[in-house]
Length: 85
Image (cartoon, rainbow, N blue to C red; front, side, top):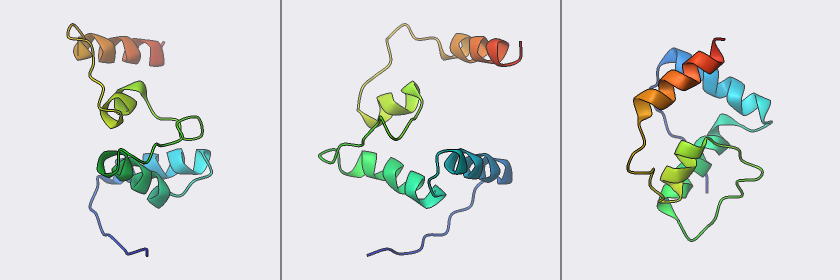
């Protein structure tokens, strides 16, 4: 049974999330529900082939951890340099 949930998010985040969902021909509700299910029912695997998410989010959902020497500041900097070349 479906029920409504009201959440408050930054307007920019909502706009980007709606575009992300539309690009994947999914509803934003489906994306949020799948994301929450990944934490609440680990026995129910998510089909990652048809639900692309970043490796970082996948590592959280799968209970995996990042390498001990992972430097997120360097990773962010490298991502931004590549993005804005």
